[in-house]
Image (cartoon, rainbow, N blue to C red; front, top):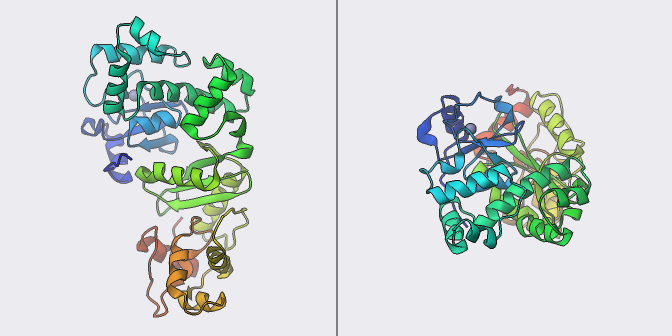
Length: 353
Ligand SMILES: [Zn+2]
């Protein structure tokens, strides 16, 4: 796995606001309303902050369904690519839904192995993966908008349905027929007064809510995909929309109990602990010891602490309400300062929204 050293969100926002060219190649921004991604110095008119998503690599932006901006050319942010690469990029820009097999590469005088190596080294994906990402970005959008699968397959340069299915599952882990919102995990960012949260839901309910560094996304998606055996695609469903509105009123101090459906596959022990967490009333705290006693394992404080930390649905399954017996805060995956703020908000001694 490729690891990144990512700047903080604040740092990226600042660089984006002032079009700082020294951040070109460090991060990218996708504009939700246009489906285009840019480098920080792009001279185009600025989109609203709420429509911007930050990405650390071009690969992530491509696989989230964005296409490179023709004005600032983000694929060229680490120096101008050689002519032969520039030609390939612009050919794909013109017709992103076409296929570009080895025979095509040879016909334009490019050795396929060379293209593969160059893309892998410079963009973190092979040439074919790039082409696939561009085609599938389009397909994603259409599938989300409810287009007929046959139209999507034929319209995007796949000469057979099986080829489309294979390509889709290779990149996203599941065949397209199963990637309707009814059977895949949709994921989105939710802004909050204490930092953005990544949220995900199946058709049954919310399955992830975590404070997250954007660079952790890929790892979280992989974990989700493995846990649920479903594709993870950007988007929203009714559970995520309900979650978003409930979180908003929670942070305004209005909402005391969430009603959104939850999905949390677990070991029997985790289930016992998480079910107990759900019973801790708003505005109060309990200790790891007390929970251990309540689930009939008084000696399992440490295991309770571990299970508490493994909670995937922050805030809604209120693991922040568990503190040390001594009264000090204990730990929190999202950062202790957030735990403090959540507790103070619930006690009514802090206004966040
Ligand atoms: Zn741009």
